[in-house]
Figure 1 (cartoon, helix red, strand yellow):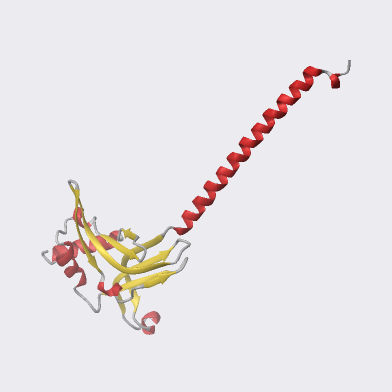
Figure 2: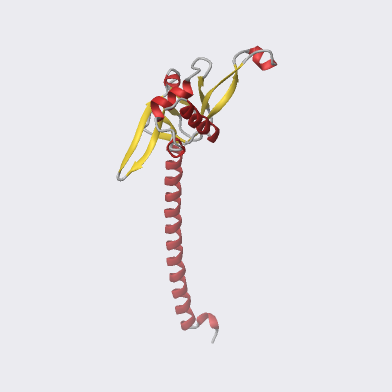
Length: 195
């Protein structure tokens, strides 16, 4: 008798085909589920607000003479915000917060930066940046006044809780830790001003 006509082999082949069909159905279902999760993840990732920012002291050329070395460089606080997300973001204000959590509530104070407020609202597309500059030549006592009026407690531990807050039109607030050099100078200004 030939192997092609053996009834036991025919049963085994039918059973194998049913298992392979079932396995193929399961794999296609898992592939569809994975594709749906990836599409959802990509959709949510694209709609997220992603801002990158920093705040530090800078020297800025006031005019062309400053660039060639014959003029004055003015010193001030420089805050730069870059949109790293896919969607456009509108910055409605830039401000400050200081303080930490005490027991079960936050002991924080908030303020708005009036210099930056004059430049807002500012809409940033993907990759665009906005700069907010506070000149110390126009406000020479800015550091001392900011320490005395807003931070008040200029201990190192308290000054380290200072954050720059960038508020957007969609309700997202980005908290940025200022540069260490700015925090040190702010602490010294507060101590020299007897805050």
